Image (tube, rainbow, N blue to C red; front, side):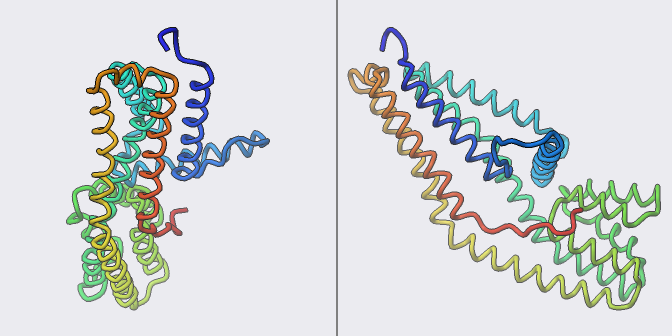
Length: 303
């Protein structure tokens, strides 16, 4: 292997990396690959993909981060991780595999951040909806007043969306447009349901807005409790998943400390074995995370 890396193992590694990329993008972003499509279809697909990515980033609290910036961070991590692995092992194929895995860290990190943000919002929505019902019902506030008054005491990460919607209301007094701004900023299924309920009450009028919001609170509380119970049951499995990820790293370091370890990693068979092991670890990591993922409530009123 001193003369260089054989082309066949390199082609196999690149093909495997491409397959992982296509599989992940199809799961995370709904991309369906290449095909014979018209210009209009391609434009609509690109627009849907960008809208999905922007909504995903907004749910993670990264409204100012564009998909291009996100991809740049992934590319930077790929280069750094691949370079460090090549320095440590002196083997190109494992470096490419580790770099590809490291490039997915921003996705995993922002996914976890998105889940934590949505979990905090889910915990606060029942209280917020109860306050809206009280203000719009017993205290006689108008529906817009109730919404924006509650928004001022919302959790910190939700306040920018409420502030933007309130500005829209002060400028246009168009509640439907203000609600659309709020839903876009929060990007949450519970927010969509609450906003649509308030919008219908504002447009149609009537005295049953408090009853409808109370029913929505009961539904949200039941869903929240069910998710908490499910996460509690998964706590041990999630810890084991993180711990097992460290075992192959320790074994690789032990292999390097043995006499001739570097030469073994530089050989063609050693590189292929390392790539296969890294691929299996990545595959098991993604598979276990997918089967433990709780179903997310779909947004049905986001336009």
